[in-house]
Amino acid sequence: MIFTLLYSTVLKQRTLKTLTHAQGVGLHSGQRVEITLRPAPPDTGIVFHRIDLPNPVTVPVSALAVCDTRMASTLACGNTKVHTVEHLMSACAGLGVDNLHVDITAAEMPILDGSAASFVYLLQSAGILLQDAPRRFVRLTDTVEVHQDDDSGGKWARLAPFHGFRLSFEIDFSHPAVDNTRQSVSFDMGTGSYARDIARARTFGFTKDVEMMRANGLALGGGLDNAIVMDDYKVLNAGGLRYDDEFVKHKILDAIGDLYLLGRPLLACYSAFRSGHALNNLLLRELLLRTNAFEVVTFDDDTQAPVGFATVARAW
Image (cartoon, rainbow, N blue to C red; front, side):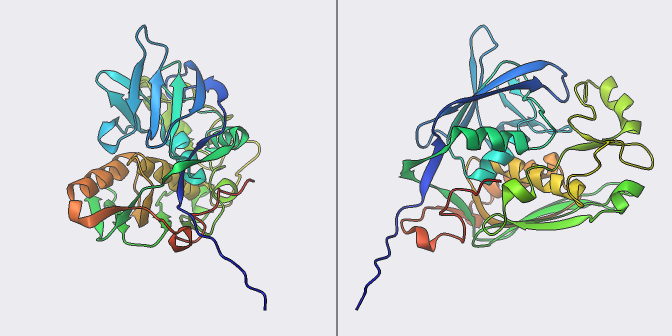
């Protein structure tokens, strides 16, 4: 008789094996910026460091540190800010990176190609290291929901109990280029491939809005090389779309990054209609107020974790 021994282990925190660098421009500031991603000890979380300042300032990730959600998610510590953090945060969530130091030489993260793909590449190139500490999750025990009314009929976002992390998003754009694509999508972090199915979806905008945004100091670094740009009728990018449903997939990408600003991975089902950075952060703040709606959990036996959570995210 042959016996097969099955070993279970604690589901562990993750950081990088080595440091890695990137440089680019900020989407909204247009300013050149360099970043260095460095390994961090267990229980550090993801921490930004403004090393361009005379006295460097540390800006830890926290849902309550989000100070601005106009067109991006911005973190602040006192008067020091780091803008447009959601794409890196999305990549970290997609690959399960818990602890990371991010050195940055300007006030805004580089937009790179407008998606999270370049950040995924950087993280995977540095390598993912398992650490000797249990990974802590925020598990929903009750449903939390927020709504906003507007001239278009309102928007909402919801977190509900779920053994895993699943996202469903619906957009509602009345535009010929968007109407020809799917305007809703669902993605399961445990069974899907974040790097393949979500990470390459780019941010998008309309030429009619560019003048207004630039007058307000936004989109100064945007262009066809780092965004999907549309006129009144069509996509202007020569290569077209990367996914048939790239618009709504980018909203999923943003939501993953916005929700990871909680500071810990979620075990929940997220669903939303016409949500964005502001409503996503409002949802997290409502969750933190509802202390009876969640619990912090670890998995001493990784076989009890949600499907796919015990393995390092697959490469491309």
